[in-house]
Amino acid sequence: MKKQILGVLLSTFSLAIVAQKDEVKAADKAFKKEKYKEVLEILKPLADKEAVLETKYKGKYLFLKGQALEKVGDVEKAAKTYKKIVAFEKETGRKKYTALVKPMFDGILNNLLNDASEAYNKEKNYKKSSNKFALAYSLRKKDTSYLFNAAVSSYLAKDYDTALKYYRDLKDLKYTGIVRQYYAVSKETGKNDLFGSKKDRDTFVKLQQYEKPSEKLTESKRANIIKNIGYILVTQGKTEEAIKALEEARKESPEDVNLVMTEAQMYIDLKRMDKFEELMQEAVKLDPNNPSLFYNLGVVNGSAEKYDEAISYYKRAIELKPDYRDAYLNLSYAYLNKRVAIVDEMNENLSNAKKYNALEKKMNAINKIALPYLEKADALERDIDTVRNLLNIYDALEMIAKGDALRPIYKEMRNR
Image (cartoon, rainbow, N blue to C red):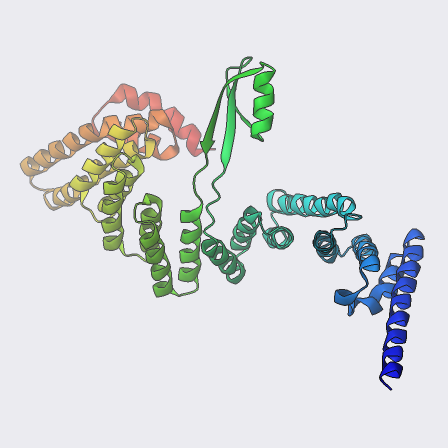
């Protein structure tokens, strides 16, 4: 009886092997006739048995299936099938199809990345871009930059739930986005050019077309990831969760001034200027030579009408960055805003000529202090606001020649 059962099992097993062989053979014929949908139909009965397919047929089965899937446009399943071939042959020690499918897989991946980039840069279709980058990441997990691009694209598409998931995945992966860049100086132009790889850079140096090879690391994207997690949570009305996310990140990297500034920026959005100033002061201690920090402290104090404090911060920003146009502009405004109280007092003393004239002199003294800073801002970058404010001061100080020279410029800018 046992021999009979064994015989039945062996007979069934032999029939199964024959079926596998016949189906793979039939699929191969259909593929050669470019009947790709028919290939998939023929191979469909084997799909449920894929894990236990006979080794000598499994590679061919996967190879035919992957190519057919690609031909009918299902590139995701095709690429995943190609990955299965590589894993299968690595496990079994067979190398028949691995070399063939690698360029096929790379081709699918490159097409996905090109489509994603085009959707992002040309079409501005951020949802499509996100889907393509996410698919590319699912095919090659080691390239976490694809996941970062998918997160950014989802964020721009205002698909905040998806963006939040991707950003949190990046945070858990401790993704920084830091890459090493390779530079060398062109002997022809004298410019320090960026190369795509160390190998490319070194080749041109060996050819003596370039010299002075150098390297540098790009800035970390971690603070930007945390910032966007916070912004999304604020947008979703989850303020406390946003604050907690930023605080946790800062505990991990207490010396990261960018994370401090990220949290500070969030408090601006929440209109918590007291907390913003507190964090900016903390940032200044971490990075005392950063002009942007002093500029932002100037802004917050100016908004609170603490003009003397704002002036001192703007001046410090200018000391650190002598061409800081916005700092010059806001410094002039911080002085000019002091005139508001004087103007109010002048209006209360219209009938008191002596008092009125004394207040007018006081106001013009402020105009004279503010003027050189406003002129500097205008010299660095002219716009209609700097021209209009300069005209007002020139007229108030009776600087006729300067006012007459600027008036036609203002008129032309206003009529554009």
